[in-house]
Image (cartoon, rainbow over all chains, first blue to last red; front, side, top):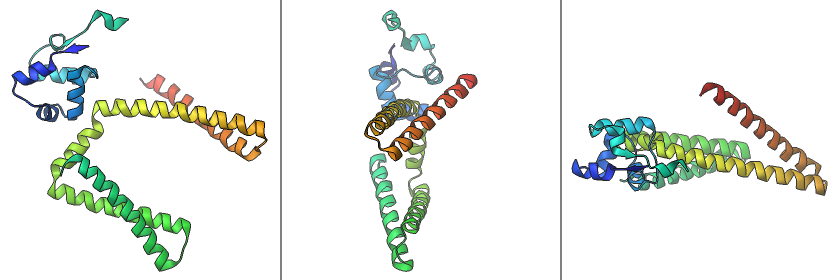
Length: 68
Length: 135
C-alpha cells in the first residue's frame, strides 16, 4: 500500500510529531506509515482522510501486486 | 524530560523501590522470602504512584504521550506479533522439555512441563474459539 502522507503532511506544514499528536498516534507510527512499513487500520485511514479532506483512495494507493 | 528518559527513570524507581522495601522489611522483621518480596513490590507500587502523581502535576504532556503510545495501533500490532512468537516459542520449549524428560525418566519434570503444555494449549484453543465467535 503506497501513500501520499509525507507529501500531504509537508503541504500542510506539519512535522511528524504534530501530525501524530492530531491523529493521537505515536510519531513512530507516522514515520512507518510514510515509509510504507506499516499499513493503517481502516479507522486511522479514515481519520487521515478526514484531516486532509480527501478520500482514502486519494491518499492510499493499492498496488495490484499486493494481492500476490 | 523526554519519553525515553522517563521510561528509564520509571524502571530505576521500580528497582529502587523493590530493594528498599525488601531491605527495610528484612531489617525490621527478620528475613522472610515471601515477606521481602511482598514488601518490595508494595514499596515499588507506592513509588510508582508517587512518581505518576508528580508527572501529572509537573509534566502532564509526558503522561498524555504515554497513554497515546499505549493505545497506539502500531504498538498494539507489534505487541500482538511479539506475543504470538513468544507463545509458539513457549509451546515448542515445553514440548521439547516434556519429550526430553520422558526419555530421561525425569518424572516430576515431565509432569510439570507436560501439564504446562496442556494448560497453555487448552487456554489458547479456548480463547481462539471465544474470539472466533466474538469477532
